[in-house]
Image: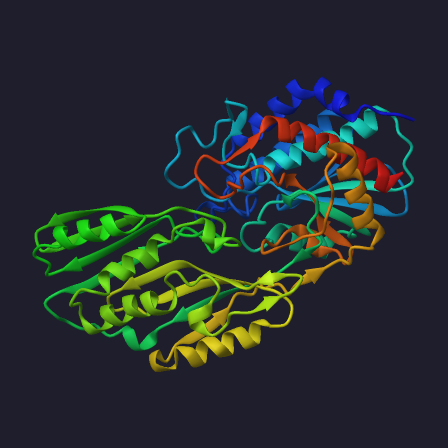
Length: 467
């Protein structure tokens, strides 16, 4: 049997784009401030989940909603189940967009909008891959379950509930990373580093009142703001700083209160080198000022240990594995307020050969003079790896090669995907090597050609794995 997978996708392109537009229109970033009993992560994640499940209901699939936290579109009745794990939540839009982030915009071959590449676009591609297999009446021996979470970007609350209440599939993949395949994922831990000795107010001619940066723990902060009092004239020094560094910013004066803002470049924390951390640059500027003792200590520790040190080299946690690559350390959230305990949240993604306990111990020892307190988030994950000779990996690579004409190879990422939920679970697309990774960035997009190509790959992959 010869199937023209690309032709099948092309015939469904208008419906695919229409469904994607409906999903992009929903701001499904987590919203704890407005959560309710029926919207436990906020209305956006709930509404996006309901919307994608409505597509399955419309098209005649079996669907299930688990407490508005997770859901499933299902086809087939085999004893063994293939799982495809995707997510409906997105990171906040942030600043710097040239188009409306929650309106699908097609421009110069790009599909632009928050979630087009992470992960609503790949979700729709996978859904239509399943739909093509069903529409063609292809014989399957396994059940296929397309499973959606609503909190992949934070604590995986949705998939945690799913695991508690539903039988997990036997093997599968997540369309939430890159082609040709991701069969290894680094461990991930968020470390909150508190500085209790800096909570006492100190005074000087120039006082740091506040320092704030970051939207969440998996995004390099694009914007950082500090408020100082007692400053008379900082514009000359700040202008010189901006001229010498790859950031922009501004100073505003209100009586003796000066607000300093620095803008960098947002990026996914798994690749902090792709971003420009506004917070560490702002701290570097402030560290050269005659600040009060507590404020000076806070910005100095940022400058000395976190600025341009995304491999953790200044914290004595740098580590490399031959297969899984470098440990990365991205300081993503910063909070300093006079009279409160200041902190820094460090997102660490680590390969085999080191563990979270060792990382924490080494940071504690390195920052001993500051008497820091370090806590790890409950949502920590150890490294995950599926051997390249596993039939799952071999089949997916074979499909990728057949559909693209390119050579397949194994790879490891710092990102954490739902693929790691299964012992035999990997990430498979939907980003292609030749396409720029703009996940979590302003003006996020996927190429329309890639979107359609991914759907063809997923259709054949589902058939080959479930037949």
